[in-house]
Image (tube, rainbow, N blue to C red):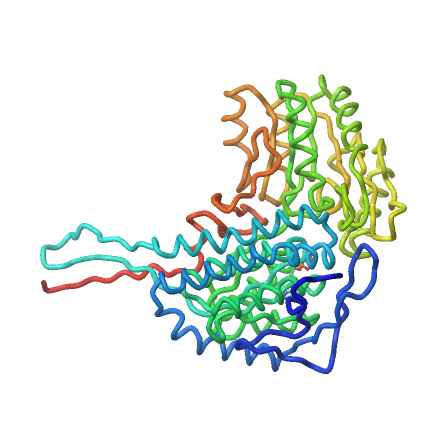
Length: 482
Ligand code: ADP
C-alpha cells in the first residue's frame, strides 16, 4: 500500500489529539491479498475512560463555540479530506476491499456530510411560540446533547463515520468513535486530518479495539455519555439499546435490512436491470440497503432473467486496486461462509443457481456474482441479510401479493420497485413499510436525504436537515411576569 502522505497510516487510538499505543496489537488485513496492512494497538477500558474524560472536558468549550466557529473548522476538515482523496481511497480499498472507484465515491460522499452539516449548524433555529397568556413569552432553543458515542461498521469505513461525526460535531457535541475492528485505518486517518484542521483536543476521539463488547458496555452505561449512535446488526443494536436504558441515553440505531426490489411488468426493463444491479452488487453486496429479495412479475420473468443474467455476467471480480473491477472480495471468512450457507439452504429447498454460486478464482475471499432463481419464503435468504453478491429472485403475480411479500419481514430499511404506472408508483410507495423507497432507481443514499429505517431496522435519521436534530435538545423557555 503506497500512500503519498504516509502520516495518514496510524496504528494507535486517538485520544485528546494524541496517539495512545498499547502493548497488545491486532492485525488489520487486506481482504484481497490477505496480507497484514498494520498492527494496531488494541485499546481497552483505560483508553475508553480517558477518551470519555477528554470528550467531557472538551464539550464545555466546544458546545459553547458559535456555530460559525465550529463550521469553519469542519470546512477545513472537509477540504483536507478532499485533498487527500487518493490516499484515503487507497487505504479504504486496502482494508475493506471495494473497488478503488467506489472508494473514491465513498470519500466524496463521506466528506459531503461534513460540508453539509458545517452549513446546517448555522441554521439550527429554535422558535417563538404564540403565548396563551399576555404576561408570558414562550420560546425554544436548540442545544447540543453532550458527549456522543458512535459505533460504526466495516462496510463504509469513511461514510458511516462522517455521517455520525459531522452532525454531532456541528451541533456542538464531542465524540468518541469506535470503528469496526476490520477497518480502523480509515477512521484513524480521518483523525489525523481532524487534528490538522484544528479541531481542539478531546473533541473527536477514536478507540481502535477488538474488545467491542467491553468497550460498548462502557460507552452505553457511562453517565457522561448522553447519546449513542450505532450502525450495525439488529442483534447488537438491541443489546446497546438495553444497555443504554440504564442511563436513558438518546439513541440512533441504523440496523439490518432485508430490502425488497420489485420489478413490475410495466417497468422499463433497461432501467430495472441497471437499478437492480446497482443496488445488489455495489460493495460486493455488502450494504444494508442492497436488494436482498428480487421479486419479478410472472409475465416478464423469463425475459428479465435472460437479460439480467447477461448483465451480471459482465461484472468483473478481482482486487479492487486493479482497473475495471466491479466486485472486490468479501470482508472476511465469516462473510464467505454465510453466503455459502444461505445458498446451500436455498438449493436444498429447490432454488436453481443460474450464474455463479461458488468462490471466485481470484482468491479465498472472492465470491462469484451469483443469481439464484425459484426462491421461496421458507428459505433462509428470504429472512436474513445475504451481504454478498447473490441475487435471490422470486416470482409474483399481483401487486397486492407482492406488497404483502415485501412487507413480510421484521426489517424496514430500504425498498425498491420499478414501474412506469404513476398510480402504482404512489400506491406501492405508500404501502411499503420501509424508511426509504427507491422508485425506478437503485442508488438512493444522498447527503441531502434522510437515511433511516422503520421496524427492527431501527430509528433516527442520518444526513439531510433532520440529521443534526439527533444531536440536539429542544429546550423550552418560558419568560413570565412580563
Ligand atoms: P456486522 O455484522 O456488520 O459486523 P456488528 O453489529 O457485529 O455488525 O458490528 C457493527 C459494529 O458494532 C462494529 O464496530 C462492531 O465492533 C460493533 N459491535 C459488535 N458487538 C458489539 C457489542 N456487543 N457492543 C458494542 N459494539 C459492538
